[in-house]
Image (cartoon, rainbow, N blue to C red):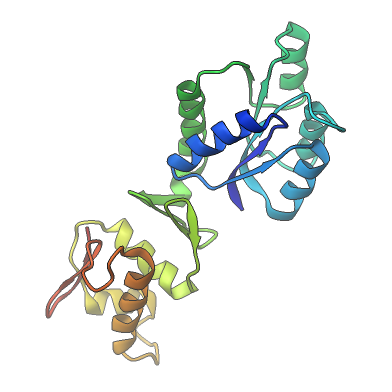
Length: 220
């Protein structure tokens, strides 16, 4: 699932939106038609849609209607159509906001950030360019997905939720593998190594997951 699906047939506007959103560490997909937008959403999903109205083929109102039949995903209509009836039509179909072109990119980004904070913050942990979604067990670095096993994701989540705190090896092992686990404590050391290889810029000189010798680990 991507963070933002941009449905816009103007390539310059679509690229502008993509660049600014990626700079804020959102994952983004772009398509140019209503039919493609619906297909992508049904196949992959998205946490928010930026939807133009005037599209080749099926228009944005059609897309909004079809998606509202199956989902309450936030939808922002972004359109040059600024008549009152257009705005009312979009909002009555279920759009969460109607933004006129030309738009202020800073205001748009603030609105998007507000939606993500209100709707998704409890499910996500972010630290710099690292973003972890707990329910979906997905991790992104710099907006790019990182493949992780379930245990790696659980371990990273535990460390990030306790940023700055020293977590004893025994505590971590008990939380992730359980006190009755048949896994060996060395398993933790191996998983820490794998995590560093995936999220550290220099795994041999880690700056995020720090070893406190003889005690445990700390996420900083």
